[in-house]
Amino acid sequence: MYPNKILFVIPVFVIVILAVVIYLDSQERSVSAAADQTSGDDTVHSHQQSYASEPGPDDMQRILAIEQQLDTLDNKNLAVAFYGELISIYFNNGRTDQAAEVSGRMAAITKEIQDWKNAGDWFHQWMLTQDDAAKIHFFSKKSIEMYEEAIKVDPAQENIRTDMAVEYMRIGKPEVAIQHLEEVLDKNPDFLNANYNLGLILYQMGKKDKSISYLNRSSKLAEGSDYEAVIKDFLHKHEIHF
Image 1 (cartoon, rainbow, N blue to C red):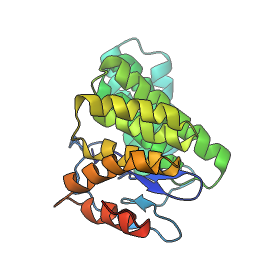
Image 2 (tube, rainbow, N blue to C red):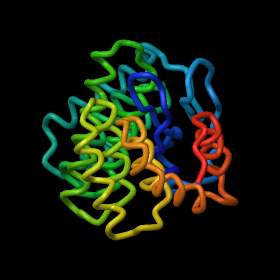
Image 3 (cartoon, helix red, strand yellow):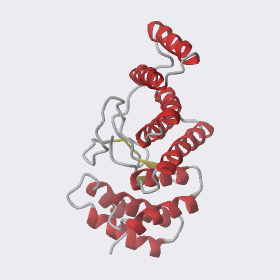
Image 4 (tube, rainbow, N blue to C red):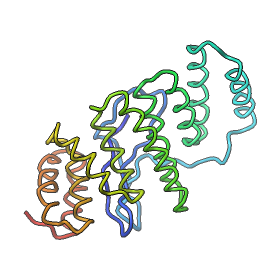
């Protein structure tokens, strides 16, 4: 997996970092994931890929066959294998929304945090391809639902809680986002993304004095990392000096 989300400022919403998560890649999120700067706002999207409207005929035939098998299958281990194949098919066709839905179904069986997190990440990734406000809101909420399930399994998942806070900010619930970020920082004061995201949220809410300590801390924590330039650019644009 890849580095958890960091917020970027635009006039209405705060956008996030997301790198495409490959289903068969078991790596944790890495701060070295490459990011491509998009034009027109401060959003960074990583490894953005094009999206097909539907899988091709052969893949659709296999999908239908698997779904028929799952309708009559009692063996949970075998069901998980079929879900894994479905995810791979959808992901290879760029349909991360469908991959997310299947990962959620699989997580209901496995109870694995990573399966819930994959679902949340993939709903988020699909949301980044949308230009309709209602759809953006819908898929952000779907992402939140998956992250919440992961946190039920292990409330100490600071990466997931930070990602979820970003989505709460996106759907217009900054107070909830702040609550989750503060909870992360209570346990890990040096968590870079939580410091930066909390500083940004407070800054956008007009609480600039309160935001400075978090932005300052994030700037120091980011030294030598891939996020150093991003954070310094934000501070420079908004003429924030410590």
